[in-house]
Amino acid sequence: MKAIALVLLIVIAGCQTSQAAVPPDPVPDPGWECLENLPLRGLKAESCLWCFTSEFSIIAEKLALVSPNQQTFGMLSNASKPNAAEKMAIAGWAKARQECYGMTIEWRKQYNLPPTLMAIQDAEHSSFLNLTADLYNGKLTYGEYAKARANIRAQSQQQWAKAAQHLREQQTAADERRRNLALQYLLNQQPSAQPFTPVVPYQMQIPRTTTTNCFVIGNQMRCTTQ
Image (cartoon, rainbow, N blue to C red; front, side):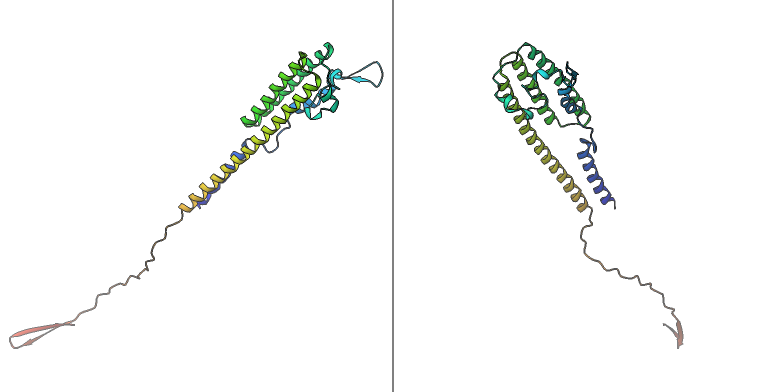
């Protein structure tokens, strides 16, 4: 029973270790929600009753405010560069995205995101900022910016998928090692085979009652014991 209990403890400990990094019901990343709300940031009514504009309306048709996956053909083929007003909007947009990413950094600390995955996120965000700076400085057209941004995202997704697969393989190998250790311990607790030795019942020896008879024959006495 002790051996079985220890095996169960080993297996349970392994399960707890594998689940410690990700709680059963994690709260959604607030940074992503922040990004999704960027198109509505600073929304206000214009002169007409049903007309509304946001803080980034001036660049909303020229670059994807939320994700490079939302880039249109028009964005990819745009050969113009940002003017002064658009540069101001781009600067505000980059700052807002930086704030959203700060929320993601705090969120992932709570759920112990593996360092390899955090490094991929950080590298993609850093590349995004550098690329956006080149757009702001007039080194890139909107189309060149959109294409480079799409390449950054594709590379990041490939790295993420590869790292996630490696982490899954590591976890599988760790689980297998724990199971093997538990099984080996259990086998070592089994009694070794010993030759069978029959038990011989104990036989009590009861002393016999003896009788001695003596006879006198001539000048001699002879005794016999029965």
